[in-house]
Amino acid sequence: MGSEKRAKGEEDEGEIPVLTVLKNNTILKNIFIVNKPPEEPEKASRGEHVDVLLVGRHPDCDLMLTHPSISRFHLQIRSKPSTRAFSVVDLSSVHGTWVSGKRIEPMVSVEMREGDVLRIGVSSRVYRLHWIPISRAYDLENPFVAQLDVLAEEEEGEEEEEEEEEEKMQVRYN
Image 1 (tube, helix red, strand yellow):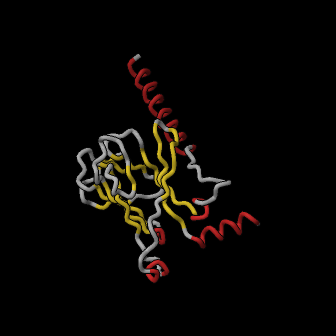
Image 2 (tube, rainbow, N blue to C red; image 1 turned 135 degrees about the horizontal axis):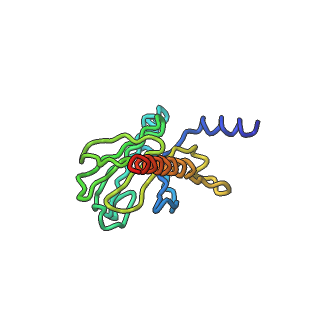
Image 3 (tube, rainbow, N blue to C red; image 1 turned 60 degrees about the horizontal axis):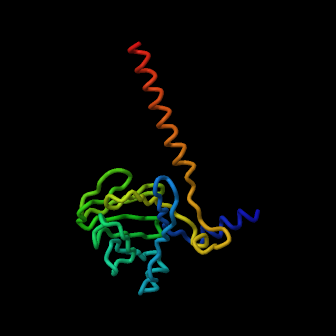
C-alpha cells in the first residue's frame, strides 16, 4: 500500500526528462533537464511552460560539452514536462546530431520518446531519454539509475539472430 501511495504521489507531482549518459554501454552520469522557473507563474500553473536549453562547447550554453566535434552552439533541447514532450533541434552543427541512429536535418525539430538515444557530433557518448518523477531527481538515498537490462537484452537478441542467420548460411553451402 505504501508503494501505491508513493506511485500516486509521484504521478501528481509531475515528471522531468533525464538524459542518461552512456559510453561503451557503461553509465557515466545522469543529466536532469530542468531550467530556471518560468518568468510567468500563471503559465507554469496551466502547464504551458517549455524549458529551452542550449547545448554546445561555448560557456554560455546551458549544457556545456567539451568534445572537439561538438559545435560551440550545437543543438537546442525543448522540453514540456506537463505533456512529456521532448524535442531537439540541430543548430546547423558541423558534425551533426543523431536521434536513434538517424542523422537529423539542421534547424528541424525532432521529437524524442522515452528510451530514444541522442548522439552529438562524433563523440562515442550517447544520451538515453527517460522521464522520472521530480522527487526521484532529489532523492539522495535512492538515486535514479537507468535500467540497462532492456538494452542488453535487445543486443543479445540481435546477436542471436545474426548467429542463426550465419548457421543457416553455412548449412546451405555445406
